[in-house]
Image 1 (cartoon, rainbow, N blue to C red):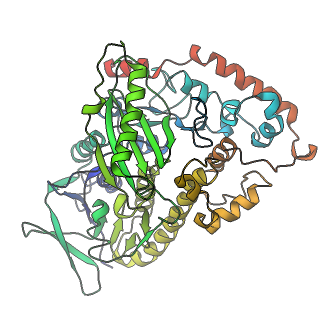
Image 2: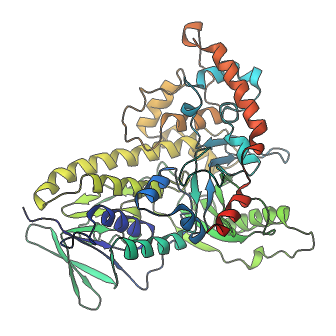
Length: 527
């Protein structure tokens, strides 16, 4: 029945500082001095620092931490993200022409009284538009490099749903300053070497390289792939998913804008390659790019060359003058090992893993920061008052996140498996039925005849909602066997009018919204 009042977070970065800030916001150590939140961060462990995409949930997270949105945008080189554009995933570039589709953040439920999928499928040849562009003006806003709101829109509110692209290193620093200065988190620089356990297996303290002992009641493992507590202390098994998700390496590069006043992309650009895909994220001052690939299908040198060729082509397309020199060859490339999978347990005794120490499931849909947010939300909402509550909370927490890991794996695999690319062994291997999880295999068998519905996602804790599956399924044209009758389309005429309304909004969207660049510059100058 020992009370839980001292929380110790091991590791910094986005995971550590989000955890520390969220717990401090909940426990209020500045007001309730019997509680404390301490973050212990190694002074010589570099952060991976390439997780630059978020989900719309981040707006509520920042708002709940009492963070000023404009201050966050200014401090973190942040820009607005309105979804992902998948380029050449369905089919490869043919005769110099790319194919693409959108996974937008603006969900149909905001503009449609009834799910539009069946109506779009029934009318698609008359409409002549891809699914995402037919049901929402957001793809049009993305194509025109528009912001999702105006300067007059209240903070964290939206005209079109949005998240952020951000500089991960600057974000961690910003969270650290806010957590320490505004929320009462204690920050210690020390290299943690081991943990001291009680007779019952609970962590009593952590021991630093200097020989200091830091005591606590609840420990949060945010030590990244090293996983000092879950792995090195408790030896919790790691469940790899390399038989399903085939990528295992990345090479990342920061690319400057050729034109400092040029457009900033709203979607994350995800461009498929012969052995993986390239991300392209537009921040205010630069672009973050990287090639996520399979080392079983290409080499590190070939991957870096692929990324440089992509960066060179996109840089030259946007440069202000043809005479501007090519600087891409001088840019630093960082090579990163990706260990895809999750811990069989992320809550054990009085230790909770968050971030890379708990799981890493491919950056394709930028789920990493969302899963940290979800971890923080569950732990703060169900925060235990004493050690006697931990056993029950451990079972519930592990069950919830084990299901979430599997659902994220299914959703990411969906993108690869539905591809019609047959131009390399990587894509051939990804479309092997043997690489499908049984849960996804069953869903696809059902979706061949029926569209996604509320019966497919009964849990309120689904990491990806039904509409997200629709964007991928319809974008990848997985709907050939649907059959509709009049009874299943009772609002057909209303749907026709709504499609026309969306088309009109898309053509007028430039009159309503500023460009990304223009709004971000106004925010920089706003005081």
